Image (tube, rainbow, N blue to C red):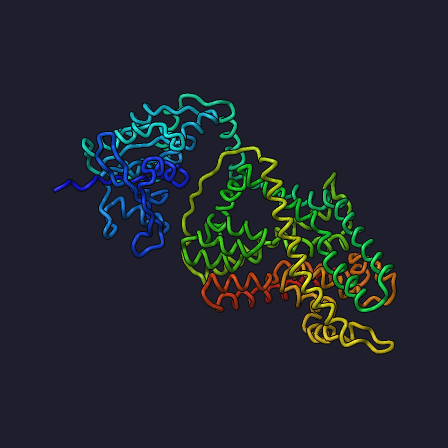
Length: 614
């Protein structure tokens, strides 16, 4: 009777390099499946020791502790403890540490070693640590931890033979009794001491990164720096983009003028000039603002700062019943709520996830930027408040802040009512600081710009053409305004009765309906409506901002901005919410509460502005 092969398991934090080490140790001798009853991937392979003995090696999901907070961590805990049905406990645990992030990874390593099971530590990615100016002593770690520590570089197959030897020896010689559980705070203090003792040398560059974290993650300085950075971003969105936006606006004005000069008068010319060029062009001119906003977002992500921002926001999230896990989906919603809602799949607590989905539309997505930009440019003076700080940039920043504050207040209310429950914990790995690569930034900006232009050429184009048709038929009689005679005008007149109390006119009522297809369609709808309704060529030649300033009061403009802070996003967002929540109950709830907030706060804004005499 042959002896069953020994079992070993790779354990460690996410991003420790376990998968690369598993592939290097097992080669093609591996199989992938799901653990029975759960959608967690199981990777198992055959490791052959130098003695020729086979070992069944399992790559367990990354975990931050044995107190599971996710399905992945629950599987890891059960396998380690021998509690998973049909999965024998490993004979040897191979704890994989990232040498460049030693202190964080040692917290979990202590908990695993304290179980008293045969253990080997793989000090992985030592080459990357040395590249970043950090040299770690495997011998010092071995003395502190009391188990064999082998330095490895999985991708270069360094240390694999020594690690295989240590696995075989550990199974044969190591025995021990479990140690009493040690509190997390104590393990963190011990991890710090062990890491300090094991570091042989570090360069000024590595020390600089540590000093940066002490400043950027400071509970008082960190949020101030984050807010100051956001302040600079929104100032730049207006200041830097103005020349490029003006050039695009002049280009579309020239195209409209050329079309009117070349084409004979008629519906075809009107469709091209008043519909397509006026409607789509009014949105495309805001491409520079979109590009500048995403330049800062991509640069913060690539530099490693965005993860620090998530860490800073965890305390704010905890105050409203969420955790830092919700920050990344909400941050994604600043680009578009659809990927933000889909990113909530990483949130393990179902109440946390549902709450995050419901507040994601309150994050100011890039589709709102054209709406904000056209109103701010038309009604807010382009003047400095103090020094180089412009009033327009301050107003834009204020709109983003209002959206964030509203999301936090709504989350607090939801977590104390319909999604009531305790907040879950949050641990995240902070990436290394690095200079963003210009090539990566350029690719990212091109992708975002193309997505924006593709929306302009598909959704916005289609809605604009449909709206133009509804605005032009039936044709107006002698002395009658075309918008009044049209199908769209009649629909807008009916809706205007509902929105008139909050300061909205018929043109705004008309823009709100197609805006449900995409937020920025509100701008193209207004441009098309005013172009169709123009009574002479001088009005037709006016830019949208000038037409709005001539037609709206300041209270109406401010109420319109308030509406778009709260109004539900496009129908695609509602459809994704339905898919992610498996029904129409929560999308219906989302529509109801967001429309209610939009109406209430637009009204409050309008009535307050009128009362103040603005």
